[in-house]
Image (cartoon, rainbow, N blue to C red):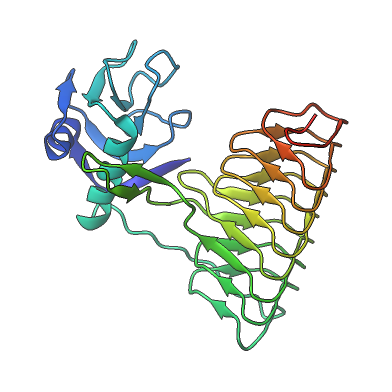
Length: 280
C-alpha cells in the first residue's frame, strides 16, 4: 500500500537527516510504502539487496541494490526507515486522517468509545467498554463484544545505536468485513504499511489476539485465546482451535484444522489437520 506525503523531500536531504550515505541521483520522494508496493518516487527499505524492487523507487538498504537508481545506504535499513517515517510525522509531511462515519442503524453501547473517523456500517453492534480506533472499518451486520480493542498500533520496534527500542509507526487500517463476529476482550491491531484484514463471515471467540498485517479469509473460525502473530495469513473455512499460536509470517491454507493448544511454526497446506508443538 502506498502512502502519499503532503509535500515532497529529496532523497539526498533525507539521507543527510538520517546521517546516511546517498548513492545515485537525488530524487523527489513523494510517498512511502512496503517494498512490494513501491512505485516511482516512493521510499521503501530492504534488508536483502537481492530481492526484487521497483528501480525507480528510493530504497534504504545496506548496499547499493541491483538496478536501483537511488539508494540511501546505512547499516540498519529498518531502523532508518522508522526514523524517516518519524521525521515525516513530526515535520508536516504526513497528516493521518480517516473519514468514516457511523450508520444510523449501528447499535453502540453507551460505554463504548468510537474515535472520530471510524466507519461503522449498517447493522453493526459494538458492546460495552469496547474501544474502536479511527482507522477501523466495520462491515455491515458485524458484531463486536464487550471490552475489545480494535485498531491500535501493533508491537513493532527496532533498537537504535544506544539500544533504545524505537516504535515502528503504523499507517494501515483494520478492515473487518460483513457478518463478522468479534468476541469479548479481543485485541486486533491495525496494519503497519498495509491493512490488517478480516474478511466476510469470520467468527472470533473471546480473548483472541490478532497482530498487525494479519489476513483472515472468509468464514474461518478463530477460537478463544488464539494468538495470530504479525503478517499471519489464515485461509477460508479454517478452524483454529483454542489457545493455538501461529508464528509470524506463517500461512495456514484454506479448509485447515489447527488443534487446540498447537504452535504453528511453518506454512500449512490446504485441507490439513495439524496439532502439537510444533504443529504436525
